Amino acid sequence: MKVVIDTNVLVSSFYGKGSPRKIIDLWKNGEIIVCLSKEIVDEYI
Image (cartoon, rainbow, N blue to C red; front, top):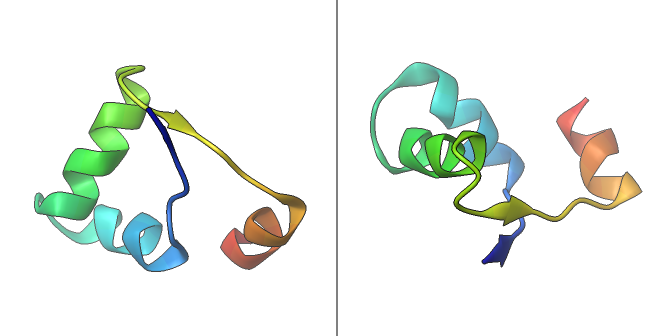
């Protein structure tokens, strides 16, 4: 499955074990593919 991870989800994943953390874990385990654009990367930075 391809997904776009919102900046709020990315930041929230550092502060707990809820849904944002689970999404990042799915990405780390190769269960989802994260799609990024230059604009999203710029927002992350």
